[in-house]
Amino acid sequence: MTRHVVVVGAGPAGINAALAAADAGAEVTLVDSAPTVGGQFHRLPAGAGPDKVTGGTRLVEHPGVRLLTDTAVWTIEPLHKGHVVHVRTGQADGPGRRGETLTADALVLATGAYDRGLPFPGWDLPGVVTAGAAQALAKGQGVPIGKRVLVAGTGPFLLPVAQSLTGVGAKVVEVLEANGGIRGWTPSALFAGRGKLAELAGYARLLAKHRIPYRTRRTVIAAHGEDRVTEVTTAALDRDWQVRPGTERRFPVDAVCVGFGFTPQLELAVSARCRLVDGFVEVTSAQETSVPGVFAAGELTGIGGADLAAAEGAIAGAAAACQAIPEAARRKARRGRTFAEGLAAAYPVRPGWRTWPDDDTLICRCEEVTLAALRTAARERDALGVRSLKLTSRVGLGLCQGRVCGRNAADLAAGFTGGRYDPADTARRPIAAPLRLGELAEDPEKEKT
Image 1: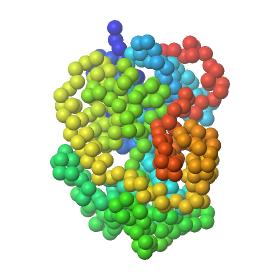
Image 2: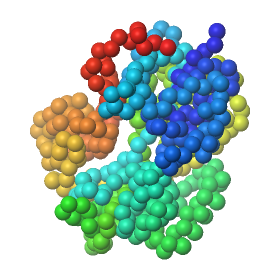
Image 3: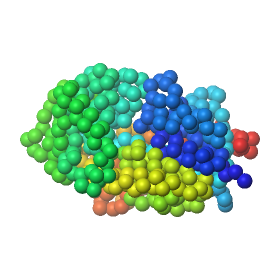
Image 4: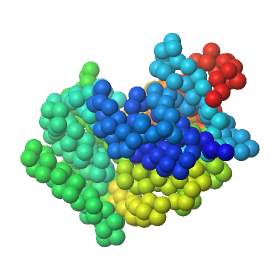
């Protein structure tokens, strides 16, 4: 009997998982909420076809793959053998959205991650965006987020963001790396990532050509303006990211792009009851999670870049189809994990960032919860867990459901009380995507495929 494998997420991990499973003879359904395949890494200009994505043409032409774009998975139900995946296809606010229930023998989660922004005074001003949002606008629409743009945060992702911005006509005034840059890399990690040296050299040429300063151990600590950002204050940092007094500098900009690493998108993994370790999904060497028949690949299992995600996807797809795992994929994954370990060691988020916001800084922008209100909830109301913190302060109860603020709120609360606040608890919700009550009431038996 042919196995049905459902793959959620059509970035590098999901594409390779779908192809590996289909090549092994499985019937594959690939689901992604975007209008086309590629994910953030292969984000395409509006109207571009999948042939511009590595593996995209073979994916859409493969007879064993059914592709569902503009489709959100809103919940997963475990079965004794397999899983039921509930999806809705179409725009969330569109009248023609339709539901479907997929029964999977195996499930591959490749939902990726989203940018992490850290709060500082003025970070809620219009014109202050995450680095990924600025890149998506530049790559997808060819539009710069501003004319004079500051890029700040930590990690090599800042460099392709600067490249995308200059490519659409923005003036990048500085790239600020809060850590020490390449000096933090271990020799083994540099050797594992040696294939990326040409890419790094290209970014160096870009910075030199456009005369963009690249400064390490420095970041933005405040944004200023009335209706939108007009100026920023930057400062030098020590190794723990405490501001060095007297190093503050203020200058004009009309946009700020910040990116302090990534947070895995865990909602479906939590819904499937996968075990988490240090905020990521725990997997075996075959990418299988703690739940039999559920596999995970890409940024869900650790931040390591597109090459590692693709290798993990190939492993997960083959394993989900009950086929032998290609040794080439195993080798690429081992090399990629060594690189990822070096990445995590060189670009950590240091605890000193907790000193950047003041009492009036909004930590939860949806519910307008300030740092002072969060502190009161943690200390005076004994909110010693994420759930009680949400109920007593309203942090994470707004439109984003804690995707933006949850991790930061948990870290700040832990600093206030010394208690344990698991950021993954913000991902514990039975409905993972927006859903109308009428849609929830529909008869799932009429939708089964």
